[in-house]
Amino acid sequence: MFLSTFEKQLDSKRRIVVPQEFRASVSGPFNGIFCFPSIEADCIEGGAKPLFDRYQALIEELPFGDPLRLPLETVVFGGMNELAFDTAGRITLPEALCDMFGLTDWVAVVGLGDRFQIWEREAFRAHRSTMRQQAREGLADLRQQQRASKLGGAA
Image (tube, rainbow, N blue to C red; front, side, top):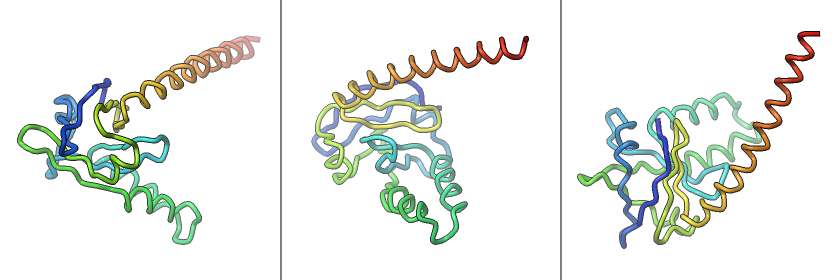
């Protein structure tokens, strides 16, 4: 699993050291990660082969001609990059993705369980604040629904 948040500095060749914990989560014949522009946020999304396989299965469930299939194929398959680790555990981020998300210096590498995201550091700080507020509100709503359900079920 990809867990925690790490701040890393891009070098002049757009390389970052992938956290050891993340490298340990990647196994298989390909010694690296898959990444593409995130669908959910203004960042790079990445993961190991199971993440790629999950997106592939999701897309293949949609019949040819479905209005959602081509956008998903374009973003996921068309934007997919295989990034191999070098001997120092670094990956080189594609210039196009760096330009797309303003990645020039410091980045945040954020674990999300089965995947991770790479953000421009300040953009992630703002995003994290928004996510924290949404999590608080969502958890409060969920707890209220659970209490209501228990009270309703007990009556």
